[in-house]
Length: 87
Image 1: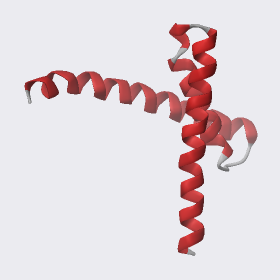
Image 2 (image 1 turned 30 degrees about the horizontal axis):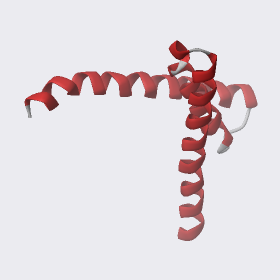
Image 3 (image 1 turned 135 degrees about the vertical axis):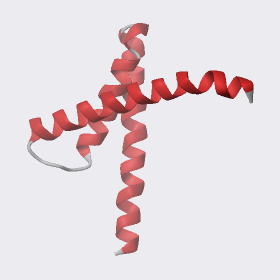
């Protein structure tokens, strides 16, 4: 329990950075593309992953961007599938 208490602020801070970057990129893509569709969060996830991996160099940025984009594509796909099943 002590280790969890010590690590919680670090994990919370990391999540806050990720969420802030994702939100900033998502809003930027909505403004830039002038439409709100599932592609904006996918692009935002890719951009967030790339920026967060930036300290590792260009190769890490590409890998981070691909992983971020794929994760958000999976999340968006599940959301779209759930909406279709519920309607």
